[in-house]
Image (cartoon, rainbow, N blue to C red):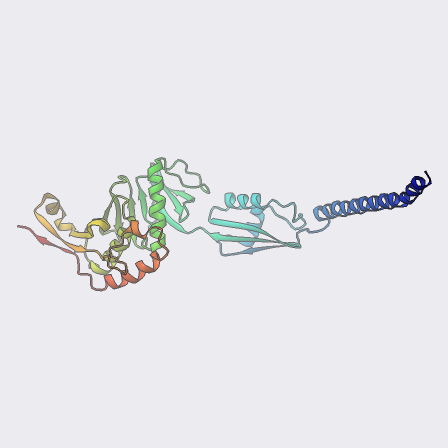
Length: 324
């Protein structure tokens, strides 16, 4: 019995020490929670208040206009600031801004980075024209086409409100126009194009410099046909020529140019166009590379660039001959 009492007596200090450690841990945890809560309250009220707002990037708008449109003010709390809403407000009010990124720069600065809208084309609609940017944003409405921009024909818009995205009412044409726009911008082939006509999406038509009609056919091999048609009209067809360039695509590897004065006879079969082979892109084994084989290749861009240069150097001129 004495041994049992002695064991209980010896265990009592251990239990007290454990309780003290537990209580101390709980105390520290409460202190940490309290510090965090105080820190959050301070950060949302006293600390991290905006003292500087900086606008970065070029724009037709002044810095003050952009800051006002963002609705961000000095004194606002940096943590509670809604950056996404500020971006939406800027994009809605200032239509000639294509992208905006509002960033927090701790401890007390806001940076607004903007990129300007770049005019791409004027979409023909029932009562006038919608000016759109390269990213497909509606910038303005006008009764008249802009002289230095291509007219886009054959694609009715679902909306005409400036600041919104241009969307063609025909879903397939909408996809085609976006693909065409992206490819032309990527290749740099939109220079001096005065008309883009997708009224018939199986026969895409471009007009270069108001004098050469380019019939691309369907969307197949679109990048290939855009690149080489542009090369032909800028390097192989004389600047004083007017007519129609028929592109046959990568599979048949042909293009034909018919002068304007001979087009009617050509279409009736009285003339025969001289066809010129477009440059053939091949790989290291001599196999022809088409759009399909280029897709997904990690060396596609490098291969196309090096082989295109060599293939286009000695390309013969394009013309027509009389077929009596």
